[in-house]
Amino acid sequence: MFQGHDIACDRGERRIFSGLDFQIAPGQALVLRGPNGCGKTSLLRMAATLLKTAAGQLTWDGADIAEDPEEHRARLHYVAHQDAVKSALTVRENIATWSKIRGSADARIDTAMAAFGIAHLADTPAQYLSAGQHRRAALARLIASPATLWLLDEPTVSLDADGTACLQQAIMDHRADKGMVMAATHIELGLDDVEILQLKPQ
Amino acid sequence: MAVITRDLHLAVRQGGATFLALVFFLLTVTLFPLGIGPEPAILARVAPGVLWVAALLAAMLSLDRLFQADFEDGSLEQLTLSGLPLGGIVLAKIIAHWLTTGLPLLLAAPILAVLLNMNTEGFAALLLTMLIGTPALSLIGAIGAALTLTVRRGGVLLSLLVLPLYIPVLIFGVSAIDAAVHGLNAKPHVLLLAALTLAAIPLCPWAAAAAVKLSLE
Image (cartoon, rainbow over all chains, first blue to last red; front, side):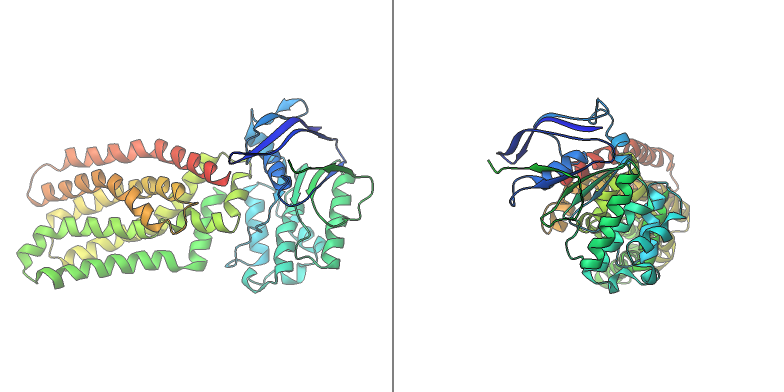
């Protein structure tokens, strides 16, 4: 169970949001909604321990995540605006590098590429990929090294309909596997039974 | 560690940084005979200083790529989130930086020393001080590179931050070679240089990690 209690966020001198509560149980998905600048990315970065909370507490099974950030980081994936895909490496090498750093088995790399429909690009250097293929390579990391909590920041940007369908399938499988998802997105991901967290600008 | 292999792999694939540092080192050193004249005695006198200053500048030249490329494409963020301690990741990147710049510079130095007509007594000291001193350049430089991550055109600021901190390394590196060339005991200088590097090993990755963390907020 991943929970937030009374969370507030400051950027610069400005209070972005305050008094925010949420909880995600295993198998659940939480979708963040709200206009630009309302703090969706900030909340995701807080959940990823990249940003400090101005007030409130984030807990995992009751324990504050700030107490052992490394342990929390090991159980999450954060898909950010930037893809972290190196253009000098091939698609397979890109995914394999992150698998190795996260210490997961190589066997899942092919599964991951197949899940996002980029298996045929495995040996193509990433510099020749389109923006959508780039994104797919970044998303394939979700499958290549397993993690319980997926934090997705506008994951469908530059994806086509097929890519979005791949992502939907991946999220459904992840949830069926007791995984948790927290996503900021403008478009309907076509997921059923999701919690919506509406952020309001202050 | 996986991060070191990753950085080495990237360096080999991209190739540019090592080559650039080496060519810079070579060119700077060859400028000196042209500038101060081919008098062997004068060249031999200035050789240790020229070699160290050129190596120091060459190492600094490649520093801005240490974290910048990974910062821009989001890899640094992903590395931070990999579950490994950030200090360890930073140390791994520093080691990879040394292997791709410090080590090639160290290997090129004796050849250039011949070019500058340095006394043969100084060769062992040159190699030894470069071996001990160049890791300190990568370590100290990492702090500067991490601090200037969010600064636009941080390169100039980086040199202003890092160069003053390089002075002790330069002083002890050069004085050890000078001592050896003049038949004196180089050991105290070498030991002081080693002390600098040893102090930098725990301190610099820690400080650079804190700076990286700050720049990601």
